[in-house]
Length: 66
Image (cartoon, rainbow, N blue to C red; front, side, top):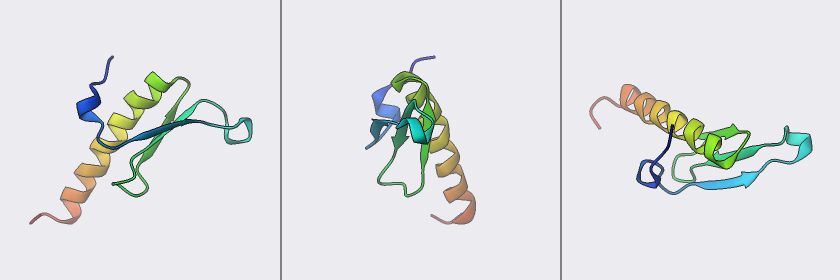
């Protein structure tokens, strides 16, 4: 499964340290606390897309009039 960069606004991907479990972490600075990880940068993007979707869905549920 591929991800389009358009689906992933303002994100940062960084390698995780061995003490953090290794792999890659994706974070979305405009969406505090929204992050995901994967074994590769591509996998992190796929997981990040799912995390962002869930994050946005939760925001909508908590603020139905927005």
